[in-house]
Image (cartoon, rainbow, N blue to C red; front, side, top):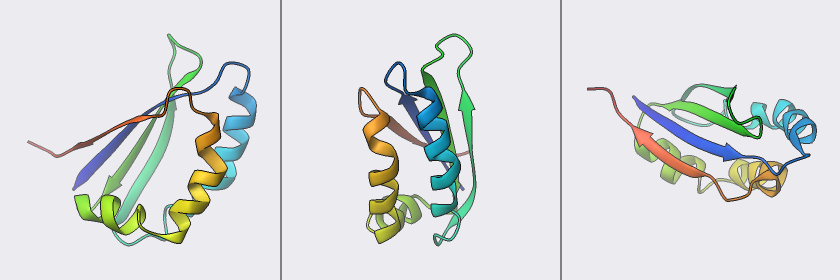
Length: 95
C-alpha cells in the first residue's frame, strides 16, 4: 500500500470555492484502478492549507494509472487553479 500525501495551499479567499469543487471532484478518483481510499484534511494552524491523503495499492497505480488517465485531466481542470504554489506530493510506504 502506498500513501499519497499532497500538501494543498489554496489561494487566500478561495477556500469556499475550493471545498465546493472538491466535494464534486472527489468522486473522480475512486473508480481508478488501485484506489483504496482518500480523504481531505484541513489545517488548523494555516486556514488556507489542506492535506489530501490517497491510499493506492501500488505507486504505479497513482503515477502511471491515474496521472496518465482522462479522469486525471478532469481532476486537474477542476482543482489545480486553486493552488499557489503547486502542491508538493509525497508517496509513503509502511515500515
